[in-house]
Length: 102
Length: 478
Image (cartoon, rainbow over all chains, first blue to last red; front, side):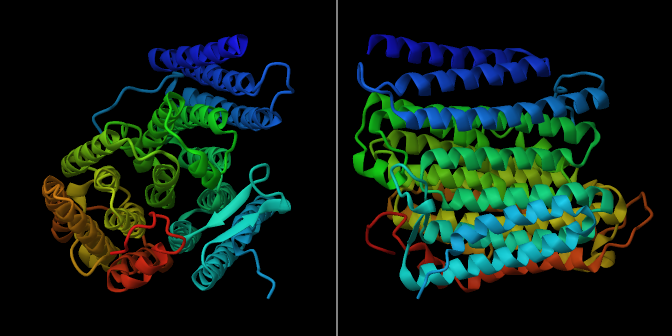
């Protein structure tokens, strides 16, 4: 159980790290990467927790969930990158502008 | 009699419609309208089925829980599905007049995908499927916001996308913890096996936080006004009316069925945040100079009311929150459409320069006013019934301080609605060229506003539907 716990802990760590990066970085590419790191953290937790008992075959359901999650993450990242390119073309900067008075 | 799986059709039909609109861009508008009518028929069929035979469960592919994916329709999902159908039809009719050919090609497939995701979300019975539908919904919604083009809409869409992904990932981490604890994803099975533990508490915190971010509960509402106000009018309408309600619906389901009731303190916290949202949203709405920003902040305030049910927790309170959700969906869609008409008519939405819109766009202003009646909670509108139920629940549980919030929120709503109506009657300093607005757009807004009022007159009927399948638990009705 201990190594499973370690993997899950690393996954949670990645999630937190990604969350931190998402908040502190202003460049959109870094934000998108941060979201992806967070996603990988969640997937790691899912895969690690699939091992229910030592020696027994792992539970396949979380693996199916991870595959679905990866599909979602790929499409979301594609949309985010496309949007980032458009934002840069429109505003000249790949950043979210600060709140304007309007 | 062989049961027709109306629920499955309500998901598949818009999906097929989306593909048809995408493959045949020149006929996107008529195809979209036909699909919209079909989805309304499916929702009506499902309504009849649920009303006659009680809550429906459908195992996709015959697999069944825990391995397969189940669809489940009780009174709560049914009402969500029906209000989506009514608002969706209104938005479809409105959009057929609103978009030029170039934009319509992109709008219709995305809108149909979004509708499909919404219906799937309301019918899903397992928490992972809810995650997938939530993501489908988010991606389609972001793409629709970006449709407007321009710096404001694109940055609004980008912020919305990041927030939406962050919320979904927090939710997914919660799903992972719940699955590890109980070995199942089905909501009904989870409810059976549920027992409090630290992992469950962590999951509850993560999932609630993710969903609150997506529902834009104060102080997590920062992304909503720019995204909703910069989108094209029909998109603003469907975002404010339907999309934010989807994450609230998931939260409601989890709260009612899955999570242990030990978290009374968390309920009070949600109530407090809701109260803050009502006041803050109302004050911000009053301060806005642009009509669409005003309506977007009004959404922030109205979403706050939904959370007043959490500290009360009684059957009546849940009914009140759901009733508010339904009437707000109709009224807010009508309001954004009316604002879209005004914007289309005068080329701007500065409140101070509305310039006699009352005389020149009487139908749209009537729609705005009627929707405002429901938002303020004046009788005989749906908003009145909702606030009455919440008021009753607050008095009955002895938590009278929520009543003050309800009254203050109503007064603030009255202030910002009358601010707009006042300017609509006066002549502005700056006059402007006016463009004609298609009649379909004016009537779509007016009919939705009328339905929001009507919801107050036929209250027993939705309240009876809410009881089917006892989504709010088996406590004594009333």
